[in-house]
Length: 405
Image (cartoon, rainbow, N blue to C red; front, side, top):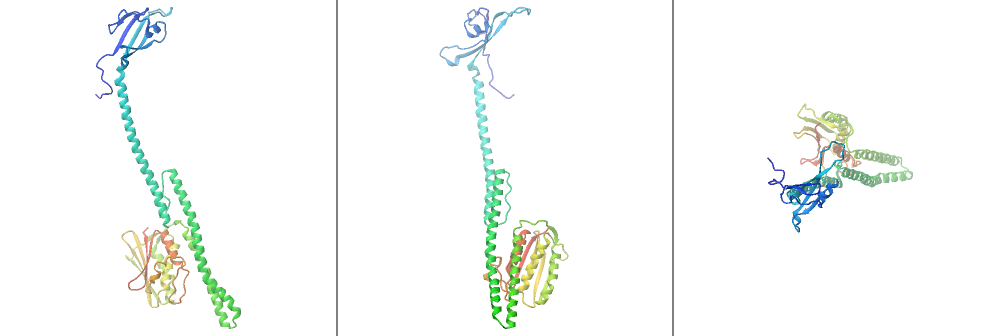
């Protein structure tokens, strides 16, 4: 059997009995039989009906020889009509040192439990520290990615205080982004509006000074053209601002991407025919179903912007090829290629900037420079990748890779 305490090898109790006068009539130790104990507190107090106890050193000067005695009265048998009579005293003594093993055992148990508590506290502290480090690491990563310009959601944290901090950081980011967004758009829009406003002002000042009807008609046409350009610029800026402020798609639907592309190609056939540019469309594998989850209007706008961009830079008697391929990694790949002159080297790192536009080869005119920004934002909302690269054989390849629904 398991051991739960010290093993007893001897009886360490002393028992003695006195008569009503305090004389010892029984002694288990056999040493003080007949001795007068009437003056010891345990006997003296008990004979008088009080609680009797004493502690006495068996060997004077040896503090470890102390013995504790507790007494109880011995009453005479009675019939219940008379007060009880004390006939003597029963005292039981136990050496204080006899309980030392139990104190040592208790002390050892307390020490052992204390060590285990320290170990447990250290483990819990390490776990808590690791958990806090991971949570703070998520906040640091969120702050760094946000500072790098990425659009990320605040981390989900189980600690309520850290969760409040993450929410506060997200609100601060939103406020700062809004302020920076307004400043950037104001500066860019002001810069882009200078050119058409200058043209409008110049044409308006020249009309009263010119008597030639043809020149007046030309100046009026310029005013109309620049006015339309200004209106298109403002409309596209407002549309792009609304698009960039959207964090996610509100009600995505399952769409047949091949059917959506075909509809946009059908609508642009007249423009392609007018510019003598051919349009081809193929899907691989043939007859496959190309489903994506997204917003039909936004995806159609992205495809149209890329097609119109390709038409603007395609020479006559060239072909724009559109291919839709189902990849093995769960992504659909949409490739739009043209046979134009490609993107100049100096513009490769600028084409994604808002309001940046290259002159069209046929007319020399520039667009608002917001078309690719539209496509880029739409791609982000659909978790898609967008790339524009020059083809070795000439022309530009626009590639969108979008997850399959």
